[in-house]
Image (cartoon, rainbow, N blue to C red):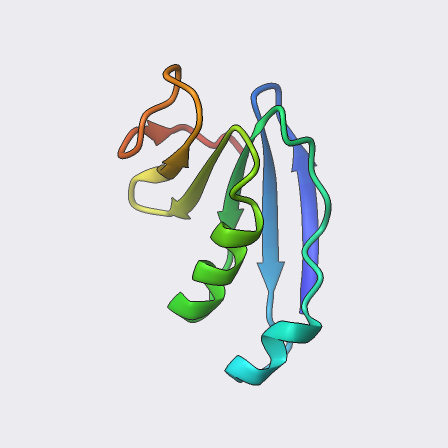
Length: 94
């Protein structure tokens, strides 16, 4: 599993890519990249829902967490600030 991190003004984009099939037992070996907890985090990549659950939990201490949906943008699923609400869609520019 490879991670790519891109810093934006208000959030960090954490993109992942799987090199092949992954099993739940491999979660213990995955070390997500560190990010600035004062910013939001957008998680992007093709993977199973339980991997997304793991990554959202890992980044829970950040200001907010969103998951990227190519049809919508980054959908906020967790927030610790009134400035960004759960369900809000954040634009992710390429």
